[in-house]
Structures are given as C-alpha cells and as structure tokens.
Image (cartoon, rainbow, N blue to C red; front, side, top):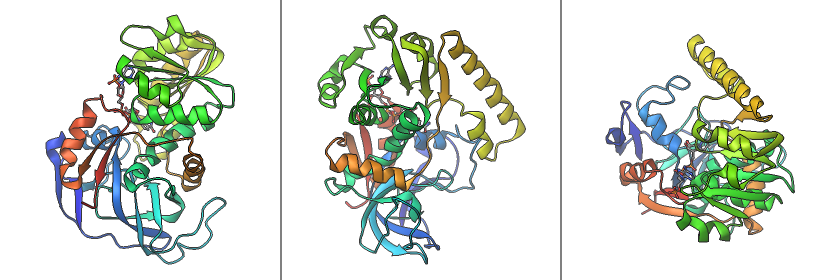
Length: 342
Ligand SMILES: NC(=O)c1ccc[n+]([C@@H]2O[C@H](COP(=O)([O-])OP(=O)(O)OC[C@H]3O[C@@H](n4cnc5c(N)ncnc54)[C@H](OP(=O)(O)O)[C@@H]3O)[C@@H](O)[C@H]2O)c1
C-alpha cells in the first residue's frame, strides 16, 4: 500500500511516499481504509526529531496522527463492548480517530487502530471535514474541560484562534457556554466572529493584558512568549493551560524518557509553576491523548451543529511535503488535509 514515511530525521525533503506493507489487523483493532487525514504540527515536529527525547520508534517512521475512513477489517474481539460510550463497529462503517501516540501512520491507504480509540464519523460531515477533527478536538476537550475545569460562564482566552486548535477551541468553548476572547490577525475577524468569538484581539496591534481582565482560563497554543501577558488577564487562581513546550512530570514519566530528560522536565515545570504563582495563577501543561469515548462526545456537538470543520487546504497523499510546508508557515486558517482517495 502507498504511505508517507521517513528514514532519517530532518526537513520536509526527508518525507518519502512509497510502498509499505499493508498492516495486519490484530485482536481488538479495526483496519481502516483511509479516506483523509489531517496535518498537525506534531507530524513535522516528529520528522524534525523534536520528539526524540520522548518517542524514538525504529525507521521507517510512518507519518500521520489522525484521520477518517471506512472499516475494512475487524480483528478478533474488536466488535465486543469496550466500555461506556464506545459503540461497536462493523465492516463498512464510516469512522474517525486519533491513533495511539506511539503508533503513527495515518497518511496511508490503510491503518490499524484499537477499536476503543475510534468513533463513528459525524453523519453531517464529509471524510475531509471529519479528518480535521480528532487530534485538535481531543486536545481542546481535554485542555479546557479536564485540565482547566471549564464550565458554562467561564471566561476563556484562546490564543491563535485562527489555527487548527483555535478554530475548534472557540466553537467548543461556546458550545459549553463559555465567554470567549481570542487572538488573531485582523483578516481572520469575519471567520472567528462566525465561529462565535465574543472578543477578537488583533495581536499585531493590541496587547491582551491591556484589553482583558478577570479571565478564568487561557489556552496557550503559542508558547512561553505569551505567558506573562496571559497571566495578567487572569483572575486570582485562574489557569493557563499550555499545549506547547516540555510536558509535565507525570506525562514525561509515561514515556520511555531517560533520567536527563526527566530532570530537565522537572526543572522546567518548577520554573513554569513559580512564574504562574507570581501572578496568583496556575500553570498546567497538556499533551493530548487518543480517546474514542471523548470523540463520541465531540460527534454529538458536531451533529447538533455546534461545531463545523474549518479547512485551510487539501493535498493528495503524494504531496505530503507541500502540505507540511504550508503548515510550517504557521499561517494556515483551520486545518490542512491529506486525501487518500483521489
Ligand atoms: N500538546 C498537545 O497535545 C498539542 C495538540 C495540538 C497542537 N499542539 C500544538 O499547538 C500549536 C498550535 O497548533 P495548531 O494546529 O493550531 O497550529 P496552526 O494551525 O499551524 O496555527 C496557525 C495559526 O496560528 C495563528 N498565529 C500564529 N502566530 C500567532 C500569534 N502570535 N498570535 C495569534 N495567532 C497566531 C495564525 O494566524 P495568523 O496567520 O493570523 O497570525 C494561524 O492561523 C502547535 O505548536 C502544536 O504543535 C499541541
């Protein structure tokens, strides 16, 4: 089967598109005939070698972290009940999923994934639209709901509202009854207003700390450069959840990281917590994880028309290099998609 992979860490020139063995479906797995998958910065960060300290699988490393497709084969036991909110699957079902963090490769004609990580594709979405959702959707649900404790009425600042995470986060927070402010360029205003943002801060001309105050939560998709200004927008006890930089100590402990990496993470996290405390706020880091039951929650919001897909551009499988180049610009609006069924 055709797949995107790499045999050495480096830039987009290291991406290869070629024949790879069709994966064998194991017990508890579904083999998906992939229709579309989304580009996430983690894909080209993995290619660069940025994640080597945490994950270092053998070459060739296949690319692609989420996607949508059709169930083509079911491993023994995969159809049995696997938990609340996780429905059973049959051959021909249209599904979407985020793969396990240790097992990438959705930029391919076929991909095998544990059934508990999969959900039925929203009925009102195409494969391209559905493929745009899993990684960013789960990131947002876990960051805002699980980590930050967002509830109806929470005041939430979402950085980079026009990005893949941001466009989903604005809609999700509004669907949960939050008040939403977001940072974006002026040209994104029409879209972000349509998605429900209550306040849009043109980050080229305005400083968030001069405009916002008494917020409950900041979702940081930009990194340490925005932390100090963000803390000034929070009320006492407010939470900044960052999805960038070094993961928290518990997350690092989950990986096969060496002593040095664990020590660096500990020191970094101590520094982050101290800085937050200076402003009377809390710092949390989140590294998203795959979860089929949470995807079912997201499906319900999509089918209730509370969340739509925002697609920046689509590229066929043999143009993964060009798709990565677009993502690396940091200027995409919504999601970049790889299509497998041209
Ligand atoms: N920890 C996790 O589990 C996790 C999960 C998902 C993503 N992430 C990380 O989160 C980051 C964002 O991901 P993404 O997929 O949303 O990226 P993305 O789609 O590439 O973000 C691009 C958007 O960012 C906006 N932007 C760039 N600089 C900005 C600034 N200074 N202020 C406001 N907006 C700005 C751009 O808008 P303009 O062109 O208008 O500036 C553009 O629309 C990535 O680094 C990714 O690796 C982490």
